[in-house]
Image (cartoon, rainbow, N blue to C red; front, top):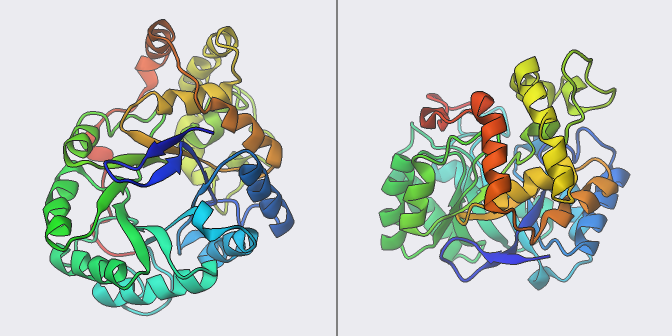
Length: 332
């Protein structure tokens, strides 16, 4: 497993990280979730990403139990705050109250005294940015997090936050956006801003919710038990990729993957890692063998001819509009 610096910080992260957004505490039983984490550890993954909102806070609990016997100093544990985690008026957003209460809840569920990275899961349009950053500074200065990151923030929002972080003497080092061969909305604005300011991308859904594995076929029903059939979590996110034009284009990638000696999943993960601003690609799994397959993308270099061929095939179905990097106008 290769490691990369997280932005321009000194923190090294495994370039393939393990995330438990949909799976832990929701789509798969805990025994299977623990087996996936064990496979990730066995394959050299040291970076684990979760959030307080995942599976109604249960995902953090499952991850905490999965990692409890590991050497804490050998892990990088990330979590997030913003989405609603309770019924109260202040149980969402990035107010000082919600951040200070949420970090304590996350640490308790994860069974750790600190997280390596605490991330704003979206931008809060109803809290002054100064209040949010001051609260994050207190989290860091009290030793509850080492670094601060954001997720799905626009270039303008990142540019506004970075000088505040610098003034408060905390390290804003990362952004966590969706990014894949099919979803490239960060390339025009977010990546250039991040490169300038020293943030690295920790990208989620590098396989476009599994579509880039090739298991979904045009004109056919989704495979039983796949994310597209899980109405509780995955189906809504994957729906936009299930159009025949997208699936037909993806199918044309198969010969390219074979030419490179890769599976389709490995090709998809390797592709995002070719972007030098990407510090890590987050993979999820419901079975350990998925982890073992995906990690083989670490260290793979795709040549310019292959990258060009991928672009030529997918260009008609790629989403690039930078305005699609956005946060809710109102708190959830």
